[in-house]
Image (cartoon, rainbow, N blue to C red; front, side, top):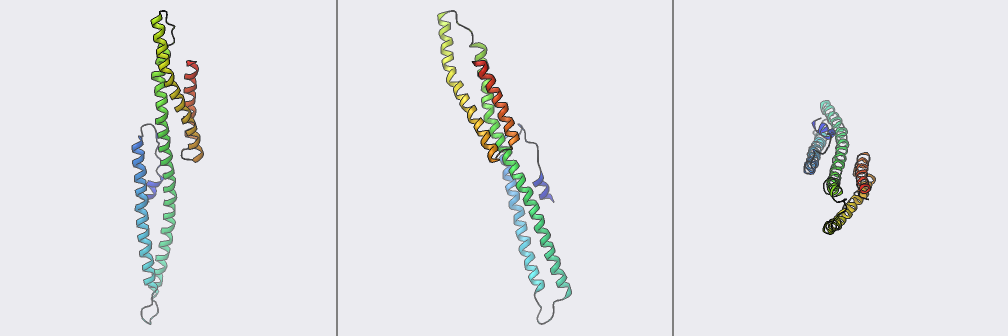
Length: 201
């Protein structure tokens, strides 16, 4: 029951969850699988040995009734254990998918944050200070130089944004991310990039 509870845990993963934290949870979840598989293998092996012993005649005498009852009890216990381990395995796989999807989403969010951070800092600062027309020749030259330096940065950010839009589609199609969540992240990013591009033009 303790293993089942652990496998069924579905915590809310938000921006407070770091990538190393999620990687640690994935590692712990993998260890959990190894633990219950080892215990199950041990119980199944010993259970079958006990069944064989209980069903083995003692000399020429017939098997005692208690041995037959015991053998049936062990068999039923093994069948119950098999059902339980299948349930644990099913829930373990669901949590494994959940954790991996959460990790991919956080990795995507961190990449998207690079774009959003650049827009909110460098991009918006340029729009606030670099849109005026220089009255003096030196001022005009300074603005042109500033614009020329800004342009490749903008192109690099647009390129990263486009890569992230494509990545979101891949993650949704492969189910490496929850489709609804990754689509929402991509739509928010696309809206902010488009808004910046409109103001820049």
